[in-house]
Length: 231
Image (tube, rainbow, N blue to C red; front, side):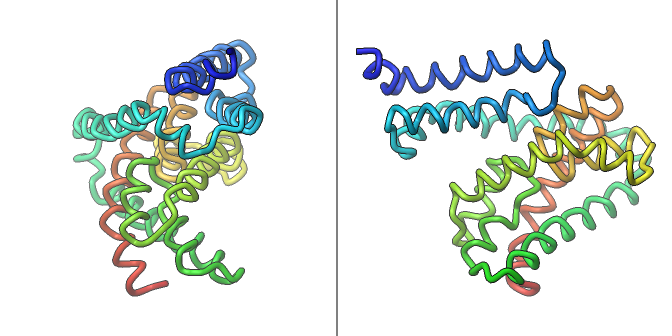
């Protein structure tokens, strides 16, 4: 009876939300980045789906509403751009240059490394948009023939890595500017990195949101060109 309830569409959706809320509460109490709510929910759901023997396709169908909400969140990036329009206009050239270089480096670095290790074209197209939020990454990878599920996992892993280790890596690299730290986290690790930037400070959070929005636009426009001519 309990298993039937948990494996129903409503049960799987409720379980996902409850696990995330619980993970957020634990994270706020402990302040440990290794206990990031997204990471804990991800691991817990894998364990539960294996235990309950729920196919991934069934889980995706049950949580379609979350996918829809995630898509709406991408639209909200436009507000982040508007909110930072004054800061953007004052630093238009360096911001655009950083976005362009970050996009090209983010795509080609992972693609060339994977190609050197023998990955085929499908894998390369799946992992190329690793540094942007999931709905944009999927919209980029799918028309190129990428595997959507692989894209989602890679984007998630990149975001978690950036949120956990990004600030330390930037400190070791001597990056001290609040704006640079925030922009780097948003450009490299999208929404999960932005949530970490918000925890660091208001300036970091604002610049990270700006970088996430700009990187989404740049990656969507440039990845098909890079795929055609450079890998």
